[in-house]
Image (cartoon, rainbow, N blue to C red; front, side, top):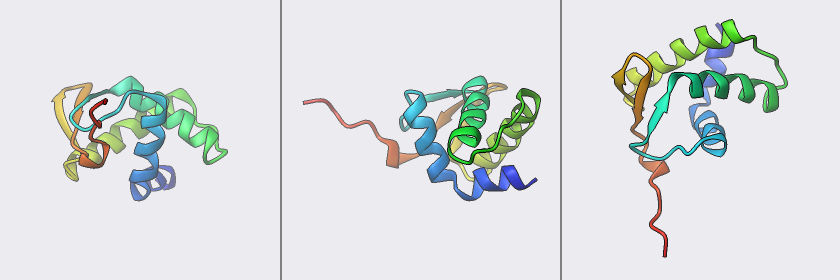
Length: 94
């Protein structure tokens, strides 16, 4: 699926977009619905392509599976992952 390839081949851009929408840091939890809605908004705002709810749900499953295979997501349960992305380490406040 072309749309899934767009998300997976540009995973840094996509994760950066998610980070702008949700509190997303290295080792923080990410939930399935956040991923799904993040896909819908990313595709609409950044790629100017509307994605329906059901299509975004299928895409979220595929993207989560891809991120798990690349060890970017560590599965905690059927709808929750821990983000394993050191580039998003939260800087301590001063």
